[in-house]
Amino acid sequence: MSMSNGHGNGYDADITASIVSRFDARPEQLIQILHGVVERFGYVPEAAIRQLAEALNLSRADVHGVVSYYHDFLTGKPGRHRVKICQAEACQAMGSHELTAHATGSLGMALHETKDDITLEPVYCLGNCACSPAVMIGDRVYGRVTAERFDELIGGLEGND
Image (tube, rainbow, N blue to C red; front, top):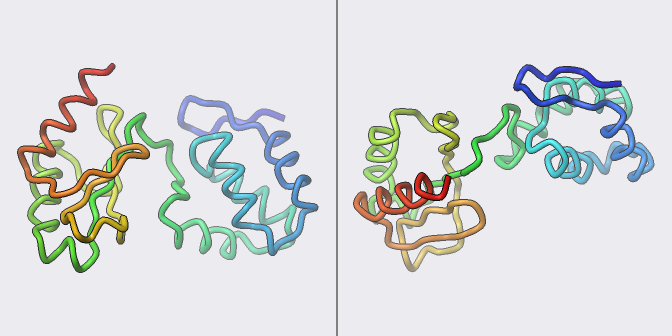
């Protein structure tokens, strides 16, 4: 059964059902199931939250609570490039708030938004504290990122289209 998710891509309830069945529909496996949904669809569609709640005998609020707690479980389709700026204490001490202000200004969007195929997100510790402030783009972590370096990194993304 295919259902629209409102983001231009089809949500397939049968695929989600197969992910749930791989974990024997056990509610304690919710996080692993959500990872499977994200791996398949790129995010957790609202239809999946409803389906998982029913399949796992949980409330939608329970499923939504887990989705909203963990930063990697997005509820909207992310851009092709996910840009994460560390907001943890070490990075704050080295200018991550200023870097975030620069990023939101130069990209013309707030944290948690997607524009021009870039999703801008806060993250709380990338494990690169000695090289603060840190930014993660895709799976790659960059340290000692200045406003100028941020612009170079973003320019490189746009050049790879």
